[in-house]
Image 1 (tube, rainbow, N blue to C red):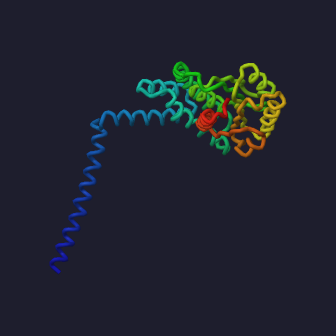
Image 2: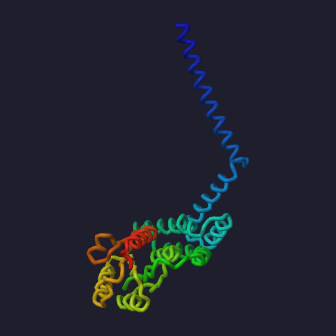
Image 3: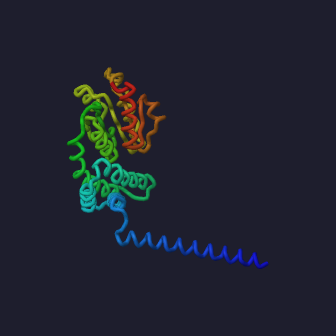
Amino acid sequence: MHSKRITLFVLQNYYYVSYTITILSAKRGAESVLSGSIHPKRKKEYEKENLLSELEQTIVSGKRADAARVSKELLRQGMEPLDIINLALVKGMNTIGDRYARNQIFLPQVLQASEAMYEALDILLPLILKEAVREEGIITIGVVEGDVHDIGKNIVKTLLAAAGYEIIDLGRDVPADKFIDAVSARKAQVVAMSTLMTPTMDSMKNTVDALEQAGLRSSVLVIIGGAPTSQEFATEIGAELHATNAQEAIKKMKRATRSGTLI
């Protein structure tokens, strides 16, 4: 009985001491963060992470001035422009796209977010394009006829340019003959089309058919994207590739380049 009491006493004190040490360790950790004694390198990483999160939220909230301010601060802290775009701007616009698709927000909020994104891009994009080497090929890109939603297309265009592609941007509401003219005049190797609306998906098929009729289909790679599209639809209309976002588009194009699909 006596030994049991001793054992119980030891266990109780063990857990008390362990609990006390845990509390003190947590308290000291918090104090070290608050007092600034955290390792300088890790502190800088925290600051960058917080700024990236802040920039992402400025895009979602459509705050143009804040988007510019935070972008400049991230550059000042040594972040690469392309990383800022991928880790904040694209994430913010993906959130906007998801909310719009679920009818949680409407066109005015989408436009506000896009204006904030462009405010940041005006600062970041010139730095990227200055260093980009045009070695990957020529892409003609546009939103198909009947659709004027070009936010996603503009993000893809920006990242493709940064990845080394020469971009021929045809804009929005682009008829098939404009794609044909661009491919013929500039010897583009890729036709990239997007749409946000189901009714205009037929315009993608019309463009693929027009390329075939013009005798250009075998010389170009066709990639499509946009909320209502899919790889199944791409295959159905005779396009090679489908991408759900800018990063996937770049990855698939790079793979096509390496495999020799992209002429």
